[in-house]
Length: 596
Image: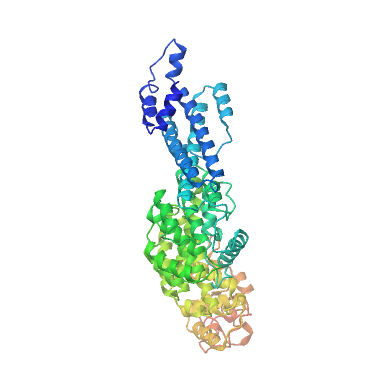
């Protein structure tokens, strides 16, 4: 009889009566009674049984309305609205009994008969709350589906098929396949962007991002009709608040992709489901940016819309997509409005954001997203021809990077700067920028691995890099280590730089200086990148043949200019010959000039 009263209250719009009953009658922890009937009536279990039963009844009404949507649209719309009201009322009651958004999740196969059997099988608090949560999740999914179906039917969009701009489901499916391939190619550098765009979310479409957020088992896209779209999107998948927002965005995306004007059906549905203007605008921009296989009209609209939306909360994927679509200027406007990347706010997007990774176990994921955004920030400026600004931004983000990842990030950004310049045959101009610290180490690593191999990266540029900075010892070391073919002007510059070295540096020059500086125990530096240690006479004697050659008759310290530099020479130049007493103090300009 109480169940009948509850049903009547909900039917006549007085669902709060049931919530008051839960609060005032079932909410007393100190109540006990020897009367079994009274104890049952005042137990929340009784209300929960009604709520589960009411949920299943509303699901049946909604199922019938969906089946009759094309035959009797007005009656089906009325039934869907009634089911939506029932779902909403039941959800409020279940929330009063203890269910919560916090524990919402994926659907569970649990019919009304199974729920009753489980209720009789166990009376534990955990089992009771689990059943409450499952029922509430079903109410959330059912209400969303009912609202969408009622809106479709009221707007004459509930037909068996939906007219779309692609020419049918088969052509639409092919269009989606083309978009995914084009977006993936752009992330790899095959879509007109010189070296690819940092693959935010693996280079997937915004559509794929939404499908993933809707459910762990995303529905197939596209749908045959708007009615099928409402059922597949809203009646399945997760019931979390974020998933519900993603479902609404996906339905708006579907309407836009079908060809509906923004101010028409999509905007109307967004108002009905109370989708925020910011999220709605992001959904519109996402649909435009995913539209790879159509005209540039959608892309032009996105170039206008995205910079207007740009703020700190705008996901970096919108900037990356603009670059991938060949619109770096619009991407630059949006990037500047967003501000520089910050590790603590990675993953703050609502429906199109980067993966949320702020917990301790996902710190590496958070860094990867941060590194991708830093890479994107540099890439945008490079694509606009602003190499100097890209270099300054790289230094800025490195200053805010965690110390544990600074070197790795510097290597990534330096590689981006160098590889982009090499692709434009402008690597020599990039080397004129004031690299230092970890960014310089990353650049040198790229130069040593790519000069003479990658297009646009001549073999001698590493030597030229050191010569530009007056670091002749390292230039000589680099030339001796790899023996690259040196242009005549570079060779002359190197010889002149070596002749201009101070006397101690000319007498002691170690090949592979950069590598030697990193050897454990080498703590004293004679020059930049040159490490020294105490040497025994026999060690000096064994390495007497230097880069200039001991048999030339002219020593390094002669001051006469010496012969041409030969990169294929020895490894260590000390004095002018074997360590012998006869070579000391001979006064002929060779060796030590008469002093031991």
